[in-house]
Amino acid sequence: MKHLDAIIIGTGQAGPSLAARFSAAGKAVAIIERHKFGGTCVNTGCIPTKTMVASAYAAHVARRGAEFGFSVNGDICMDMRRVKARKDAISGRSNKGVEEGLRTLENCTVVQGHARFQSPRTVVVNKEVFEADKIYINVGGRASVPEMPGIHDVPFLTNSSMMEVDFLPEHLVVVGGSYVGLEFAQMYRRFGSEVTIVEKGPALIGREDEDISQAVREIIEAEGIRVRLNAKCISLAKHEGGVAVRTQCVEGEPDVSGSHVLLAVGRTPNTSDLDLDRAGVATDKYGYILVDDQLQTNVPGIWALGDCNGRGAFTHTSYNDYEIVADNLFSADHRRVSDRIQAYALYIDPPLGRCGMTESEIRSSGRRALLAKYAMSRVSRAYEKGETQGLIKVCVDAETKQILGAAILGTGGDEIIHVLLDMMYAKAPYTVIQRAMHIHPTVAEYLPTVMAKLEPFT
Ligand SMILES: Cc1cc2nc3c(=O)[nH]c(=O)nc-3n(C[C@H](O)[C@H](O)[C@H](O)COP(=O)(O)OP(=O)(O)OC[C@H]3O[C@@H](n4cnc5c(N)ncnc54)[C@H](O)[C@@H]3O)c2cc1C
Image (tube, rainbow, N blue to C red):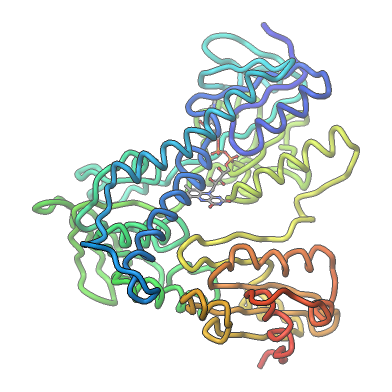
């Protein structure tokens, strides 16, 4: 048995940084990875998809050449092998960087294999037993594959298998109209596929406000993506030349036939094959590990970080989990999950940046609030770039004047949202923005103008 100060299971967005912190403190740590170093974000999530979104954006702008004053001889044709090769190179660099970074850490043992608990203090990998007083679980999640009728009869793609696709599907049917599904839908449409989104709910990205969801729908429909909502009873079946997705839709034709189908219907935590019961670690009914505000599980000495604790589903939430755990341990800085403010982006083009509460959450909370909306078509920088779709929306507390939540759907929205997010962390009133001088021409220079439009909720 090997005795250590700490064991980390998984090399996602929290584990490697935590290993580095243990190493720097002169503590003996083992980090265990069963598949690819860097986990989802590096290999099958953020990095490869944003690389592909960039290829799709370049093709889209090239097709609009005439608007910008240039012509391209011949059609814009994608070479999907080169798109994949670019994606593999960029993602591979990060994967390699994570592995090399870990292997060169002092006091750190890197173990490749599947980890399982043997007891609250021991973990087994490749029949070798590791023991530590502190164990950190960073095992992430995978694409959910629900037991829908026909699922075992037809081939289907997930975000992971999409990474191996080096051809252009003739007609990609995306089941699931949320963040992952929308990003793949738009990029493949821009690559040249026909694309249909089948969503069981009444709206795309159903957790967003209706106006934001509707604006996103308009953006993607304008590019020729078909959207089928209210697909209550989705099933799959073989079809000549591909797959039929039966929907029983209230809206549109009931069946959609495509050459390929991508399932983007949520994530499942990788916790069912960890033998958590041997350690006594509790999960909820979906398999997410239950943690307290400092990410400790019900078993003292075992923590869960990242997607597997159900407290966030993003790279930045996983990394923030690392910061919370490490600062509590090494800096006696009492950080908590409840201190963080919700923030994320949807990387369609133009992107949606989001922070804090939605308008509908604020309305249901019953608090007095002010609301302002501003169309991107009124923003001069958007005009200059020829990217005028979307809107800015800000909600503030009527009494404290602090920002409660915001959405920026439009060019640069994923970056500009941080102006508002940082104001929220500073707990500053929105009037500070009104007195700030912003740079021209930017989207952010309109934020004071947006604030001037704040009016009580009606
Ligand atoms: C298509 C897609 C796009 C995304 N885009 C974004 C984005 O733009 N921005 C963003 O913030 N987030 C994005 N995400 C989410 C983001 O990828 C995850 O939230 C992020 O990777 C955090 O993961 P994690 O740290 O929890 O673990 P993961 O990155 O999932 O890593 C977990 C690791 O643990 C390993 N593991 C699991 N079980 C065991 C075991 N028993 N033994 C040993 N090792 C094990 C796995 O092999 C894996 O390497 C995207 C996700 C997807 C699917």
